[in-house]
Image (cartoon, rainbow, N blue to C red; front, top):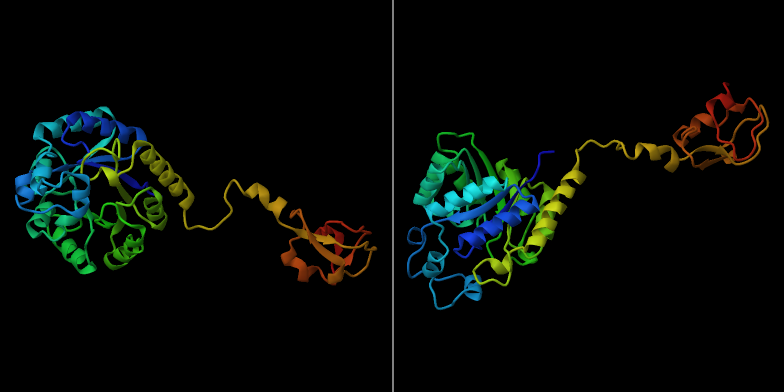
Amino acid sequence: MKKVVIIAEAGVNHNGDIKIAKLLIDVAAKSGVDFVKFQTFKADKLVSTIAQKAEYQNKNTDTAESQFQMLKKLELSEDDHLELIAYCAKKNIKFLSTGFDLESLDFLYRIGIRLFKIPSGEITNLPYLEKVALLADEIIVSTGMSTLLEIGEALMILRSGTNSLIKITVLHCNTEYPTAFSDVNLLAMLNIKENFGVEIGYSDHTLGIEVPIAAVALGAKVIEKHFTLDRTLPGPDHSASLEPNELIEMVKAIRNIEKALGSSLKEPSASEVQNIKIARKSIHLDRDVLKGELIQETDLIMLRPGDGISPMQLKNIIGKATNRYLPAGSKLQFEDLQEL
């Protein structure tokens, strides 16, 4: 089975501090995820100065500041990106970032990013999608707030670039922080796969680790999850993020589920073959039987171990004569029976 790709979403949980960003990379590397992902944007290219914040953002940040003011403080500079990429290489973890505007997409391309992650908010942004279609070698797209129609339209645009056969993974997602379990609708992930024939995954904003683990069991090939150093830190996304130990536990659980999924082939595993004879039954005699007696069904009992004649052969045993005296409790063997 192909390994599930796990993306640890640092996002803006660095609070604009490169030192915190590096600590987040340390946590991600220790947890065993495949990517640590940040967010690349220029606030003035992303949001107007009068745009309101989401309710969850108001709960976790200064209510007096606008969305623009909040995001301005969370920008990473171009030099910050280069420093973080180098730090990721040092820590042996892959760097990824989501671009939120056209200039940021161009910048990510210039610094060598070819896997582009599209956030849920950009799935109806035609110029953005067209730019990604031109730049990307591979695409992961989140679908929070989306309908199947909107997903289909976005996929058509993304496949209209220079590489119409580009690999696209579509992540089911709910864009509320945190997402209530009743709003997850995880089975919609399978609906996406059925309708569009794409690889599927899940970007999670619930509290805890249960839902992404369930998504892997249902067939998710990519899991994305926000994490933080401390959920009590100020900032829009900390409260809905995993803390370091939780991230480690999520990765461990996903890797265990991967092993448990195995293949679709149904056959005894190597570990259980040894138990077949112990756990199954074979045909035994329930009474003393003299040589030459014809065996009746009432003479037989099915007992462990299963290294004799299988009970599935019962009808072939009834009516046969024994070629020697057999006491009650004897495990029948074919050589004990005469051919009629």
